[in-house]
Image (tube, rainbow, N blue to C red; front, side, top):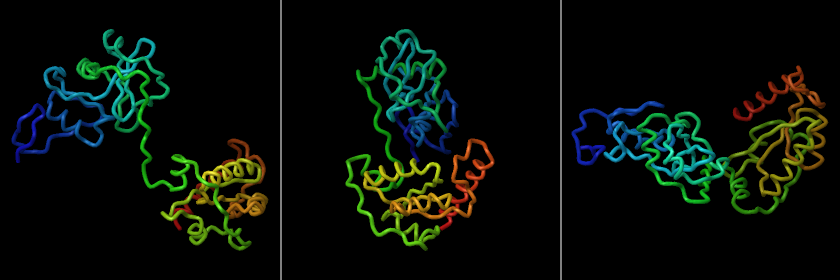
Length: 271
């Protein structure tokens, strides 16, 4: 079956074109183009070892600078550093506040771009527009509708239903279902009496944002009573034996709390 060649026209594809692994570069334009067409094309920057003017795969983006250095900014709004850029490349880059442009880092990504050919391909881009701002990152996955609405537009505070009864504080499928969102999502956290103030602030702002799809794990009997008295949906974690005082970083009580909270999240996921 004819396949489009990297430099135009068509070739006969007897075998699949290989895809480069992370941080690999190639002198074969077809391999470079195939990699640039993969799902990781923006973060994983590749370029053929042919000068851009000779038809090599383009490295889309624009140039920004700070101090005496230059970065290429990709369409997804992340930036990679060009340590070998020429004075001319550095001079044409738009001066920006780099703190607003995230680094191109993480699995399958490359922040520092070395090599004459790669640097030339990056520097072939024009300067970013003055006042450049990266695009807002997309919200990935099915977020809670109340959280999304709070981020997009102000929400009305929630209207609370009847409080839990005394026998409704055991973690169960029914309890989770009662407070889960229509898409069956829920936020779960935990607290002991010493940190009650943090939990009250957290709950207040969630409800002001229109979100009541949450549960609070009460790590001791005292905090469970406090949560109940304020009509905050909670479940008991008293059986974990966590103290109601400040746990102290690295102390045996602190380590015990870490075990209890991990077990709690596992229990929620098992429901």
